[in-house]
Length: 470
Image 1 (cartoon, rainbow, N blue to C red):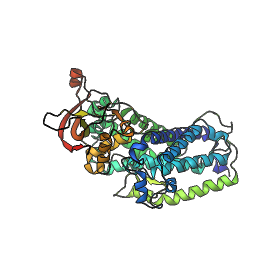
Image 2: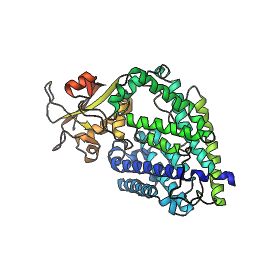
Image 3: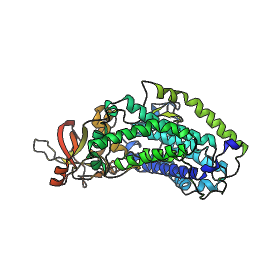
Image 4: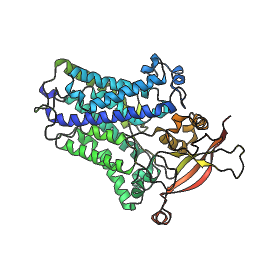
């Protein structure tokens, strides 16, 4: 079937799969480094307790066979090694069936982690990574030309990511319609980057251009992904350019890089590369059947996500099945005008008085020290820092895990302390820990020149009353 293959997209497929493998590698390494404090046996939201309260149908995962921290570490490490191998090109030298199995195992391992990750893994880019990984199973390798149906399924995924985000904005906060949202967003986004201060201080007309360009990229460009070439490639380039702008202006874990990877399904790259000169050989019949079956499944599961795009009550970042196969996406339907931050403090004084000296814990990514320039962490995902941003918006976000977090600080738990950037009690844990809510804003240019601070903060109220070791 000549229509089934697209040899001209061989190099595009290679780039897509390499980038996807790189994102999987980062995802598994993030899990290895952070899971003990977050969801380990003695973590803030332990996996064994979660599994005891759910069924396999509610949360399908390999950890139903039994959970130990060493087992979780083995799963995450295996995933990292496999992702690294695919990143290095192992998928193109393996037999086609083995390469498909490798991507399927990668998807299964990460699915097992996401489905026990609870609130720490509730981000839309977790479902996006799983859905992209599932489609990667049906993209083939260098031994066969890229299958056209799968390339269009990846474009359909990218369309939902971009168009869903555009619609949720248009239907959401009024500032998206009057083009003023970027006046606030660079300052109030979950985790600003090293250039966010400068983006924030762009003139208001440029902020309006930013918003207008975003609407073009997310509402007008996505349909063009399905047009003939060169229009599809132009649309893909517009998506990539927009995502690189977002990479420069903030920290959104691997969302932007994963979106860039998906865009290569529509971007026809010239030239060769480490693939056969003809873009790969003919596909075996069994592979064609497998791809067509997967296409039929995705189209069947697309009904509810497609209907969601047309709904006035559009859901944002919603999974319709526990396998995260075909999902609804979106981002920043509403924009905060004021930045609030929860600051964690401790003291080693036994008795608390009005003169008690409190020392502040420092986080790796979220704002704390007003003189520290925000750092670039994406595509690495600082899960605790992100949840602290949500906690500042509403105490309800933090209710399940904040007190266990404080208890871990009072106990001097090494795994928890490794999540932080600065521990003010290096020799012994504090006797009391509390949380204070502050309002943060970027300094003006004059304030920055005067004292070198990137932020100005004002105390709002006590967020969590002092908690003692007992």
